[in-house]
Image (cartoon, rainbow, N blue to C red; front, side, top):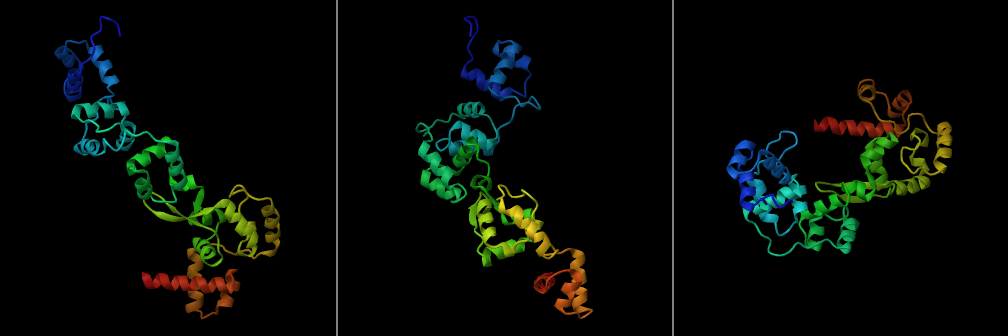
Length: 297
């Protein structure tokens, strides 16, 4: 700043904050005895402009209350992340509201980061919050700064539904493997829900020991990477040996044919299986599922 430039005072900044969007830049400049260009630069520096509308982002009562409640729990960057504002905007609003921190903000330590990364997705954020003595909002902000976006991707697991889609199988087949065939899984705790997570490498180890459960020919190549070398050879073997429609999803048309053949044509399950290209057990399980659906509807 040159010697001839007049420094901006807190009172002038407060005036800009309160009147931007109400008065023109020219009028504010006349009131403060400053040029329009000077006012414009100061508004930009105070981060009062919205790039889309060029109007001040008005603070709501809820946002002000958030600042008051969290000023001693979160730093400006963390509050900015939670409110969708810039750190400088938070700092300005704190001054306007006359808020002060009781103590200096505690910096994150390497040990805290390691604990957060180790247990995120394994423990709930509330439990991690209690352990580290930091707010849940502070944890979420820290995870964002550490470029961790979502418990599932951080832990490196896929859901049962995602695995079913990759294998082109019914999700109930995956649940059957989990509960009856000991497919390894891990409960993943996300922000709003808990779900079964399956590690891809653990899945392949299980699949190698339980080859009879899968038709490898139906698994698209490299759909679950890294794919072990033995899978390609097994894919060729299953092309010759395994039934064509094994583990194939049931369609609405097949459901209608199945229901009609069993209840109207009075065919037995083995005969229906031969006509539909399904095993007797597959027909039996599908009939049970259809009965439950009709009873529930």
